Amino acid sequence: MNNKNLKKLNQELALNDYSQLPCPERIMRKVDEKIAHDSPERRFFMKRSAVRTLVATILILSVTGLGVLAATFGWHTKFMEYFGNPSDEQRELVNGSFDAPMLSKSDNGYTVNVLNTLADKHMIYVLYELILPEKTEFSTEEADWYFRHELIHGVYLEHDKKGVEKSAMTAGIGGYDILAVDKSKITVCEYMSINAEISDECLVTLSVGNKKYVDETEIFVGDTQIFNRENAQIVGDFNVTQSWNFKYEDTGKSIDVNKTLDLNGYNTNTLSKVDISPISVWIIAEGDQVPTALNPIIRFKNGSEITYNSKDKNAHAMFTSYADGSGKGYSTLGYVFEKIVDLSTVDCIIVGDQTVVIN
Image 1 (cartoon, one colour):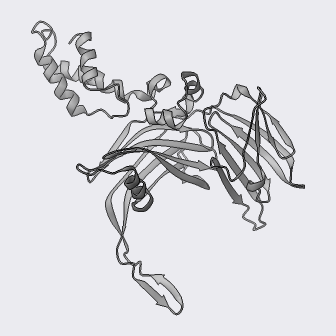
Image 2: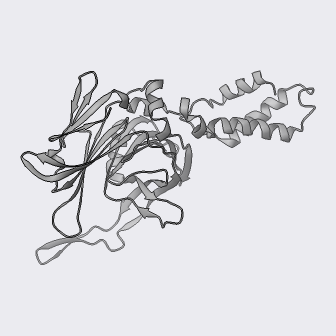
Image 3: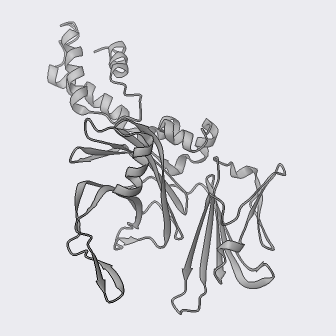
């Protein structure tokens, strides 16, 4: 099979549509058809089985090898839109923390395709598709209801360092956005932010499944209303869980500050650390619970500024208290940028009475 036919076959199979996972059976069938139409001379030097295996392997690897090729074209269209349609230069800024796992798993007619991931030290995004069984179609409103009320879903992180027992990461905030609904295909971006630090030794788990309950009869014990939940939770229609070691390279900057922080006239806190990446900025303060008072200002070299507060739609506030019950601990407040930011354009971050120089 010559290069011209190989390229034509690639187009027919739509292998450049990175939102679709390759189907080996379909590829083999197409390869057989193409080889059958090749002239005997072209098939003379190799056995048919060898030819079909070689060609199919090349085609399959051209898609499943996206983890290697992600530097230039691994981004799914919906993931691009979610991050403000970044330019080639912007995508290059987060190249080390982007991956295209291209994983797929099915259960009882439901399929979950893991397409893209993007992370920094405190947050991970996972783009995936939920493919419903045949003849099942949802509108956007129905899909929203389905995810809110009928599914249990989320992305989780574990430490997976060699020689160290797997352990769940510490406190975090999760959420999701439905990006597209196309009849039986729902495209979703699931995210999780944590107050620990993400590394390349983390194991990512995406879980999507149905939840169903039986007998929820109300029972009153005195004046207390309880529910009869004995054997209440039953297996839903499906449960798809996939885990993988994701590609991650820190593309941000970390500045250890460790200075007294004056917030609203109180200087009982310490600004411990500032982490900034092309997708977010995280402020870590030690002392009383202070997420609502941090309100950092991101100042750029061109004079423009972005001011955040804990009520901002892009804010993720977490508090981890000390075990001694003093009410003190670490406050972690993260702010997600609307678009991928070139860190070389950031001048400083102002938190309370402290100015943290970035460049």
